[in-house]
Length: 217
Ligand code: AMP
Image 1: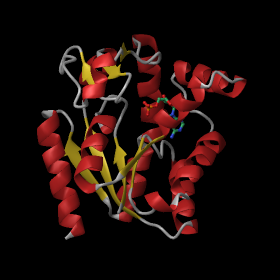
Image 2: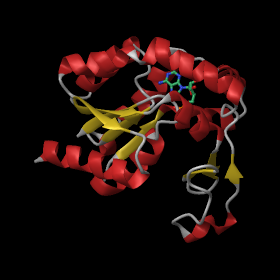
Image 3: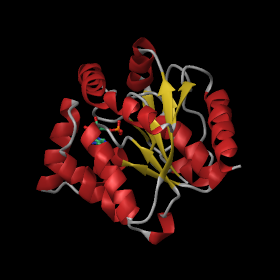
Image 4: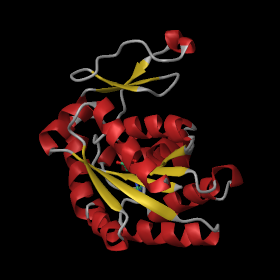
């Protein structure tokens, strides 16, 4: 099954996706991660993307849709994708429907993680990511301990450039204006499920797993 994990920046989409990938043998398609891969290449294209990300705005749809199609068209991922950070506006939601149709796939479920803004800011400001396995920690809520893989002993804990207070307020504004309306798009399709994203990580995962199991039968 394909599913969308939805919620504002800092809602825990990435953290929960990693758990669902393990539980259901799915593939996490994070458009933020795809963009950060491009940025790492330090090309002029990558630098342009970095500037947009640092401003808290959305990267143009054409760029995202091209990166996305490369993954959606991969047979190995067919009908096994968790879309994390996409779609972020109504246009992207429509493009995603077209893309799935083109590759004979469908969207079965949209999960919405609901979190209050004051908690979101702390979650983003405190976020640190392992340079080896990409696991995220939080200096306030989930202090960096060991990762799950032995290889990560050589890790560095990285802070995202866009995880600063100035960019965060712009990212939250972008979410409210552009992304929030996408919730209704999936409500209309009858596939949206809301989950309280302010609980403990484990308890959120359990609820998400229960929803997916019920749907798979
Ligand atoms: P994320 O890692 O999902 O928090 O995304 C970080 C930044 O990447 C966002 O603030 C946007 O600038 C950009 N980005 C990620 N996904 C998308 C998308 N689907 N559409 C446009 N921009 C995106």
